[in-house]
Image (cartoon, rainbow over all chains, first blue to last red; front, side, top):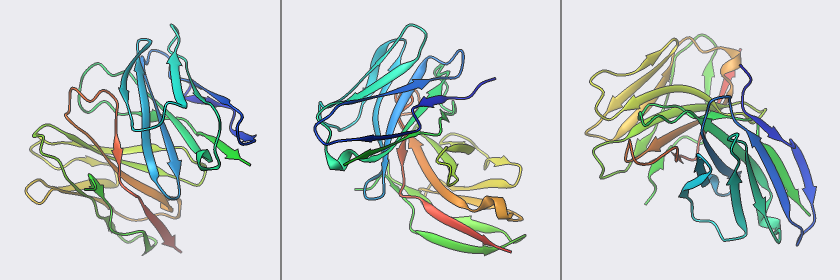
Length: 115
Length: 117
């Protein structure tokens, strides 16, 4: 069974540009969550999508947005990039049937560098 | 206030010895779940073990066990017989309330474990 796939793995962008990251969850998983990991702030929750609807949202500015497609693949977009957006962006998928011990399976992440 | 606190930024352990990684949490919800993840240098987060707030027994998964002390709000990870491949960052995370939080996890700051040969 294929794991969570994130593309691209590495990305370099210039301040002010926008970027789109992609996440393909494990087959059959309907929940996709996104996290930002930086040395200063650690791992922070961005948002979660379930069946194409945003179910939870973290405390990030509106420049960060996402969506989920009918095949559960998800994209996140960051507009007007700032230097502080440089981070490892992790995607996690879960079957999420409502059970509390449902673990989240993570991809290897996309490392975004803003210059 | 921090919801998840990991007080050990870095730790060394001798190969084949046991090590305990600390995690304390803060929640007023009676229903929550605690997770431990391992993050090697490749970046991927690997699930290790889960403990639910209503679980009567401490969780175990192979060489990993969780020392869950509910009254003290601590969920320490114990790794027995450390191996060189255990060198990585370890994160404690919480989901609360358990069945309404979707797949949203709150993470601690992590502990970097280094296993010495």
